[in-house]
Image (cartoon, rainbow, N blue to C red; front, side, top):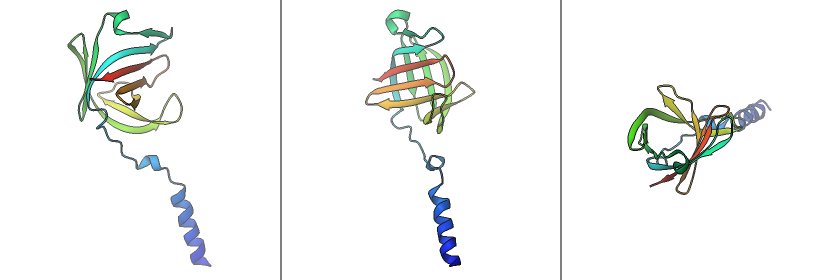
Length: 131
């Protein structure tokens, strides 16, 4: 009987564990050159595009860094790692965690589109297209 209780206890412990703790994320789909298409958000909930801002923005994502180019000029470079974390927008989502510190972004890739969502209130959700 004791053995049955031990087996049941072990089964219960392993069935309740959080799979996200051990899940590793691959950055292979992120690596490449991405062209900005639009951003929506801010306090006023505006939508900005390359046409409305007269800016081109490109992300160059490598194995460990994100470089941002605005109108062809490098404006920032941050190292990153990927984690699954609870999002300010609800639920656990894959995140870009930047170093040196910059607010995290959750992301989603759908075909050749990359959606980056800033992890802060009144921030922006941006859409990029892979070149």
